[in-house]
Image (tube, rainbow, N blue to C red; front, side, top):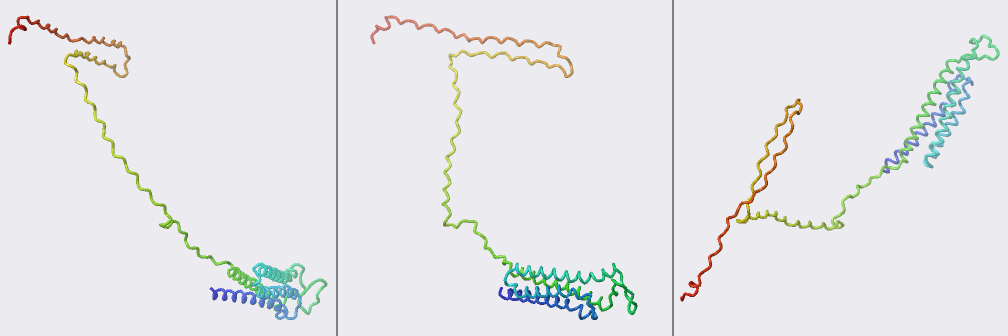
Length: 251
C-alpha cells in the first residue's frame, strides 16, 4: 500500500512539473522561432502565468484537491488565452489585408504577411500548449485517484444466530388418538303383534311430449293413495274355569 502511494505521488509531481516546463517552452517559442518578430510575443505572458500555476500545483498538491484543481483551472485558461491570441494574428491579416512582400512599400494600417518562421513558431506554440493542458490533467486525475478512500473490505454479517442464543425448540404437541368411528345403532325389530302396513301402489310414469311439439295433452291427476289397512288379529278364547272337584281331590 505504501509503495503504491509513493508511486502515485511521483506520477502526480512529475506530471505537474512537465506541464510547467511545456508551458514555459510555449511562452519562449515565438521569440526563439519567430525570426525576431514581435507580433506573436503577446502570447508569452499567458503562457508564463500558466507555467507558474502548474509549478504551484506541483508544490501545493498535498494541501488538498480544491487548491490543485483551482490552480490547474487557472493554468488551462491562461494557455487557451495565449493560443487564441496567437491564432488571432493570421485571422486579422486575412480580414484587413496585407502589404506586398518587401521591398515594396506598405500602406498605412496594413501589415506584412506572416513569414515561414512565424508560421512555424505559431504551430509549435499551439501544439505545446495543448500538450501542457493534457499533461496537467493527467496529474490532476492521478491526484484524485490517490486521495480517494480505498474501498474497505466489509466482512459478511452473520445472519444465523449462534446455537447458544437460539431458543429451545418446543416439543411437538402430542396428537390425540383418533376417535373411533360411531357404529350404527341396530334398528329395532317390529313386535310380533304389531300390524303390518301395506305399501302404496307405485305411481305410473308420465310420458313426456316430443321435442318441438305443443303439449296438447292434459296431465292426468295423480291416483289417490289407498289408506293403509290393519291386519286383523284373531281373538284368543278365554281360559275355561277349573272345576271344584279337581282342586279338592286328595294328592
